[in-house]
Length: 89
Image (cartoon, rainbow, N blue to C red; front, side, top):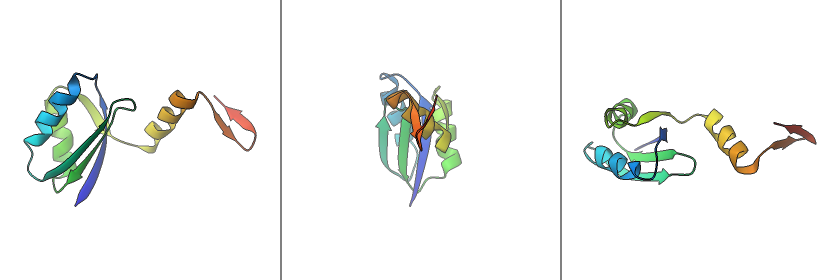
């Protein structure tokens, strides 16, 4: 079983469209959507490229989740980073 994390630009109304397009793929076990960070976690046996392609075909802008998105999400939530008494951003 594989876990695929995507960043999907969507509003609240797009979650239904996202779940509908993913339900058509074989091998999808679970879909978790975090609307605040626009992160979607898909668990199952489907290939990650097919998942991304299906989401993009539904009209949503999507890409694989990366560590950069984690940093941007943390910055948006907390406003700044602190590392060894040095402030970033």
